Amino acid sequence: MTRLTKGLSVLALALFFSPLAQADSAYLQVVQAVAGKGEAGQGEYVDVTFTPGSRGPLAEFTRTRVGKRVEFRVDDRVLTVVTVQGAIDTSGLRMFGGGQGFGGKSAEDIARILEPGTYVEVADAGKPDQDRVLNLDAGVPADATSADTPARKRTTRQ
Picture 1 (tube, rainbow, N blue to C red):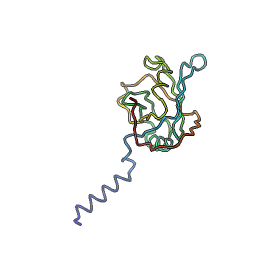
Picture 2: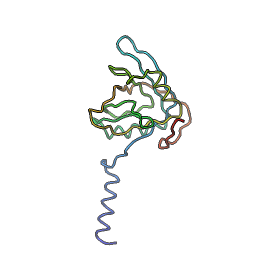
Picture 3: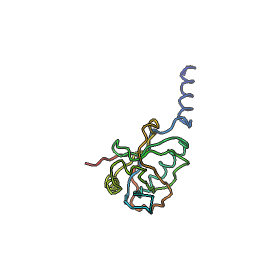
Picture 4: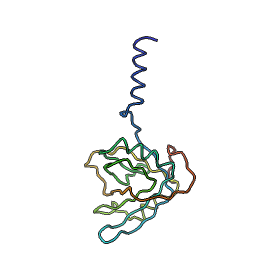
């Protein structure tokens, strides 16, 4: 092994184990999505429960992005963009419509998009001027009971 090859091997290993070598996205499988209405002034929301196997990928992805913007999307349709305040270590999320609602859709429409088995992709968001009108509250407990499926496999609706 030449010196250059050894150096490149060490560099590749260092990048692989470096925090800079982050996953580009995480996939979360939906168990259930339920629309609801908040108290006065809170508007509509959607409670989303993911499989227990989705919790780890979500926590790991957000742990390395504190202070950064990420988006939650289905089939390249952005559902929400949030700034990560801390690792999201839960398998349930509550999405609230912003000041303009859910971008012209009702909470029921969003819940229908998030049917059981659908995969939600979490990825780095674009520029701030591309903000969407949704926000997210990661404090909702989840009671996901379905069998885990690999969070990296993505399915789409027909």
